[in-house]
Image 1 (cartoon, each protein chain N blue to C red):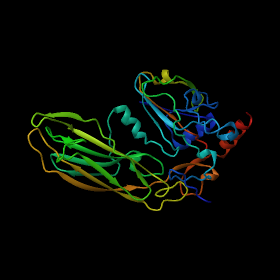
Image 2: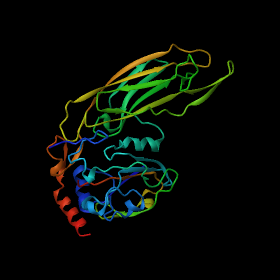
Image 3: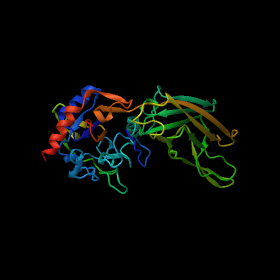
Image 4: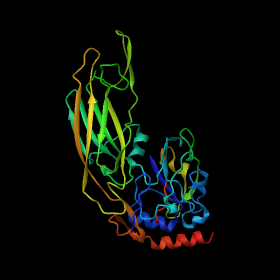
Length: 72
Length: 287
């Protein structure tokens, strides 16, 4: 396998031009900014239970992590 | 603080991941990327032509206060750069909580105690994972050290870090200083007192530790140089320069048990991701 190192110096097991290696372009906005209320949502968890974000966290602070995939 | 994660994976894949990797927090399934879009974090570098990949977010994290208002967010120019979970706690706590199981060394003296530690991810170096070198000064009552800028002849506190090739070391993050007014000559200085944490973020590239080859070595040596002068309101102690060495373990990354990731000497998932990938292809192909 040929390892193609990207401009940041990172290695990955797919070629450099593979779409999975496309990162955040300069100037791209990334959603709510500090000082803004995080938008509410209801999504099922892994076991089918609907989770209402603001209701579930109650009076607690939260971290919401967006990640690419648990599959690949 | 409560932790939530969101991806475009289906519930079945997330359930296998949660069980296989012992994930204790909710893995939320946004199969149509509705929340990903509404949040404005859809990876717009991909198009529906990219089929199976279309719908993923730019990876990143939001941290909120108790009212749900964003107090910090972490997004990077490369999807390989990821924060240590400890950073999220730092933001929530408003201070750095050093773990007792990471590479740590101490110096200084009774007046100024110094601790240098690798913060985050049990102190391991892995490709792309953001860590911090934290140098903690614990100053005796009445003493202060100086932040930049300082007048000629005075010593501003400096922390510098060196590592092997492939370790990318970012600029130090300094905590806020307090002003100290001196009457004669009339000057205002920026000082720190009490416990002062100076953090230097760093990460490794593929040159040092890669996700497509086994580890080249078990650990790397990181050198730290600290320069400071402690004073009280009347007098100053002698300027000090100290160096420290930390041996930091190198580590591979966790990869799914999927052909493309396997056989590269990484920590492979405990469950077969193949059927989930097949289902993902089918789901995307049907649209």
